[in-house]
Length: 429
Ligand code: GLC
Image (cartoon, rainbow, N blue to C red):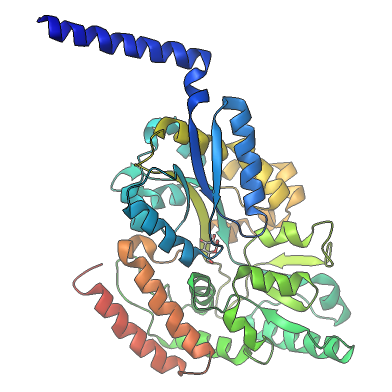
């Protein structure tokens, strides 16, 4: 062994001995400063901050929180820019359940850090987050579209929670008429996400799936959206605009719909579960008056459904502190943290056992009554269309938006959507 070689060996050993010594005394951890990008819909940013602060206190690391645009579509564009530049500025990314196939190559495999924790999470989400055998993100919270309604108003008008969209349409019209006569001219029957963005893809998939019209692209990659059941679903949704839903719904995202419902100006709202905790907040005018059920069926032969949503945490492969970043991810996605977020913020856990936790169920009773809605939620075709998913979804939401704004008839919109999807697919996804 040459002097040079053994010299190097000694250096290597002493560096690792030093690192070990430092980490035992906590100095390595203290030195790290990382950043996380969190969502900011509703109270999301606040919940993220609280979790991050608790971890900082425990480990001595510092964390910068970067807030991102509310809409998932804009957030994706921003993340694509940041990640394509290869910058180490953001270590931990909060990513949508539909993005592992689009962004997965920019993230590290978290398996070496998870210590088997993935076994506690819903398996379909873990499968969704596994790209080419690599676990690119750990589930943080899951989502499914549900129907919020005003218990007090349904009682006042002698109606019950609707089983079908047809019933919803009739009840919404009745309550709207009554409330307007009683003097609230801002009152609407039904609010949802009708803007041309990813949220509309979620709502429209629910309408179509509830009619048995499939999920746009099937799990073998076949384009299925051009069918009579899908046309019937879109015809129904278009009939709401200007009748039980304001024209403005064509520009509503989640928070716009919640704004109308929570201020007491709508009978029904389609939204994600986070709206429950906020709607029952101390300052909410409709506190204690909210009911939640599965979204209605598309006619008697249809089915209850909800689109699968949710968010994951991933570590950038450009991070300078991947171990520290992975530790933060494991903390935020842990059972205790998911329990806190479920109770205080009505974020759906991704850990199955928490759906049996009595504190969780007493804070958010519909996590129990709608368990099947959450576990059988219909997935958008993001896995099968991989990196093309955003193109597929934007073709879909634009087609639906044209139908809702009466620019195109449903049948014609589906014919041209079908040919557009074929172009995106070409020889394969
Ligand atoms: C919610 C869902 C997410 C979805 C988005 C659409 O945040 O969790 O999966 O893409 O809404 O607006």
